[in-house]
Picture 1 (cartoon, rainbow, N blue to C red):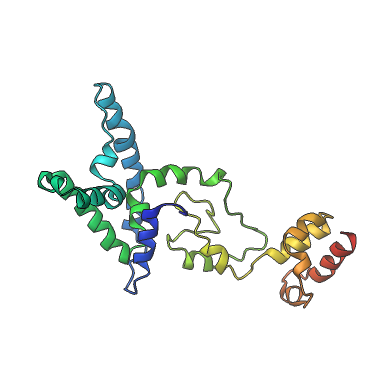
Picture 2 (cartoon, rainbow, N blue to C red; picture 1 turned 45 degrees about the horizontal axis):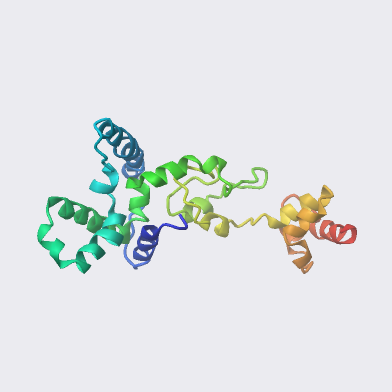
Length: 231
């Protein structure tokens, strides 16, 4: 989600102001296509050819639009003698690339959602990733704001570490509860003052707004002051 250059191209194209295609039962079903591609085009077919001593990177050769954009097209543009040798394979891959670029204007990162086998592998590790989301279930009101802003239409409060999540962070930014104050109070009450400070306790202006709106009536400001006096 953060490093892929082709993902960046899709992000920029999606920013073009046009009507957007939201998730539907059909697009959700298409999300499983990348796992099919992973199994057949990355594992089964290449392994079958490997037994014949024929190396065949099937996905890269027949599908990958990123390779076409960042390697194939620049190489052909810089070497005119190759242009006469272009055949159906380049036409096929260029068509995939063009389709993905056009679709990216209307659908959020379609290659990542539907075709990328590397994304499929990464997604399987989301539940144990070093960077993962955690929902404070006793504080979450399930208001649905996180899902509304999620470009992949994930039920964040139900599956915060869904395989489809690309860690864009939009759900965390949009959460109306922003539970940092709750963390400060919890750590301070438990005597874990170093963690309370890590949550920004020393930056608090003690305005009292957090305690005023806290539905549990937690005296967060008082707990923060205790943390300061003990720390």
